[in-house]
Length: 212
Image (cartoon, rainbow, N blue to C red; front, side, top):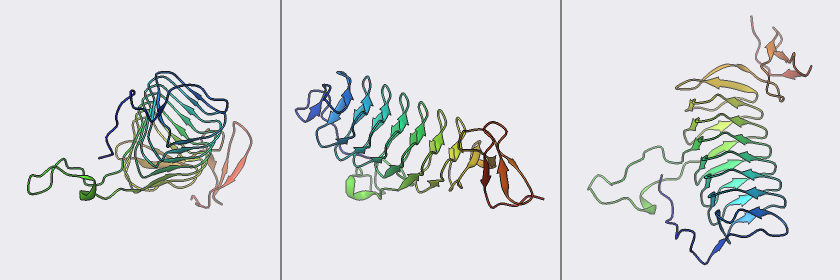
C-alpha cells in the first residue's frame, strides 16, 4: 500500500502544538496541509498526513496513522494503532478499534514484473467507505473496495472482503454476515417481516430482510 514518504517529526510542515480549536499532543505529527475540525484531539505519536480532513470532535488515539487525502467526518473515534490508508472515507460517528487496518491496494507488490521497484504511478488506489455510525472492531482488516453500511458492526479480527449492509453484523475470516445490530450496538431479534427488535433500547429497525 504505497504512500508518499514522510519527513518525520522534524519536518517544518508539521503541527506539534495545541491550537485554540483542536489539540495535538507534542509527540504527534500533523501536517499543516491537513484540515482538523474544532474540538478534535490527536494523541501520542499519531500521524495525520497532508490533505487529510478530520471533522469536529474526533479522537485519534496513540500511534494511529491517517494517510494522505483520507476524509473523516465528525465525532469519529480512531483507537490506538489503527491504520487508515489513502482512499478511505469515514462518515460521521464511525468507530475504528485498536490495530484495525483499512487497506488500499488489491494487488500489493513491491516490484513490477520486470523487477523494478513500484512507484506511485504503478498501482491503483482502492476506495473504501465506512458509513455513518458503523463500527470496526479491534484488529479487523478492511480490504479495499468495500462499503460498510450505516450502523454496521465488524467483529474483532474479521477480514472484510465484501460490502456489509446497513446494521449488518459480520464476523470471521473471511467476514460473513451473521445477523443485524441496533444503532445502540446490541444484536437485533429479527421477525418474519424484516423488522429488527432491540431488547436493550427498545428500538425497532426496518432491515428489509425477511426471515422464515
